[in-house]
Length: 114
Length: 117
Image (cartoon, rainbow over all chains, first blue to last red; front, side):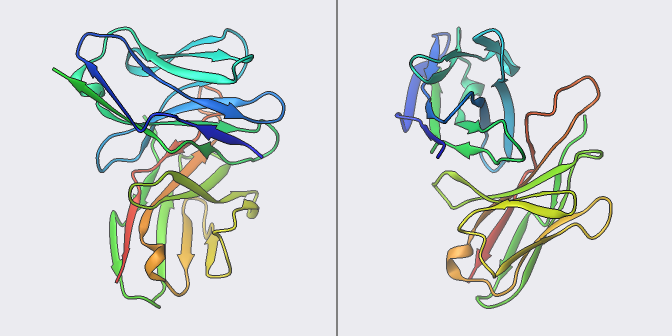
């Protein structure tokens, strides 16, 4: 069975500092990995994905994530955090076969302090 | 930019009543999903739908739930007899190939907040 772990409930970072939101996964075979962001009272917005190819993927709003197969991780990063990045971030995994659903982590709340 | 829309944004109902949550997926998408998020918890899969039938469903999606694609644009989730524990945010998502894009990511609607009293 697929699973995703986001070990941190909350991440606090000062504006302008780099940020990392951690994600590890468990899935048989090669996973499809995703990050979504949820702003208050809003739906989930797609940030980026890893399907195949380069382990470093770049997404929206300056975010990037690095796929590490040996550590089964897909940490979300940004070189310089903005106050507007404060939101709830979800890592998700999908088995590439068929019409399988996304399996989400429990989410990490990012707070960027001015 | 194309987007998934959902109506209503907020539904309040009495326990035991039927509710229908509506979604309009992105045009030309072929795969459709419902997820829910109980307040403060993670997003949970309910059901996936493709080619006019359910592809997969979770344990949450019991006999009280049903989905339908009544026409070429709408995708609905029906809860026949709501329970208090059905109170949650319900998200619709769709997946398919956008012009120049891939078909791997799911695009989510803004959600319907269901409150069962």
